[in-house]
Amino acid sequence: MTDGADVLETLNIEKVVHGGAGLARGAKGVTLVPGTLPGEMVEVKFLGSRQGVMEAELSRVLTPAPDRIDPACPIFLSCGGCDFLHTTYDRELQIKNAVLAETLERVRCEIVEYPFP
Image (cartoon, rainbow, N blue to C red; front, top):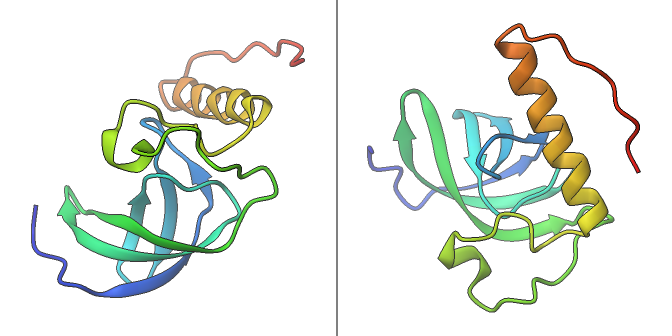
């Protein structure tokens, strides 16, 4: 990974991708930010880039998503074991459904609609 220096930037999270990180597009290009949710405006510190995609650390949430909650675990962002402790369970299921649908679409797999609770 290359050095991203201690540059802070404000980004708008568009969606969550496989692995649980939020995806944003900014001046440095596509950036992945763990611990974020779609629709959030966040301030990030760049860590570097890998394969043309910037990786950043969440510095602070400027505008939280309506379904953001306080994680029950104090080491949520540093551990990496749980991707969605910062949102409601219903929203977690919606995000996972969207990630799966996008993944299947990318590999050109037919998507069958199932009722979502």
